[in-house]
Image (cartoon, rainbow, N blue to C red; front, side):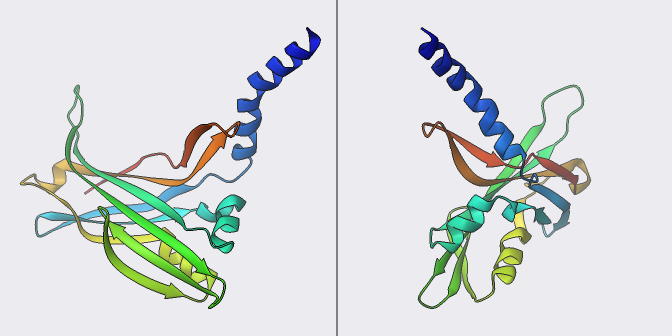
Length: 180
């Protein structure tokens, strides 16, 4: 009976232990978010800070595993005393792979699942800037809305973790929001 109680205690405490180990890392967060209207669309730019603070991300990338971040964008119109109205959405993925033979990083940049560009980097710090300093022109259509009435929201998914090697969860930033 004592052995079963110890197993049960371990199972119940595992989420707290896992959360404590993730919380020990500096939290990644979206900073300097701006949205500007231009030709019926919204241009979005921001920085993702502390994205590479998780050693799992750096280790996976340096070992040759494709590693990337997914940025989710939502353009909303705030409505007082009611739900926000979603106007448009977009997704940007930046996926890097290390080639140990050439010692280069290949970065694929996708917008709404379509490949936009591919770049090659020889230095890790240059790759890190390209993956975390985002500037997207004409990303979200305004669809006839007045720019001063809308806001842009952004969140980043960094990686997927597993609790007890079974239960998946995403390591993500919180949603950040800015007026257009």
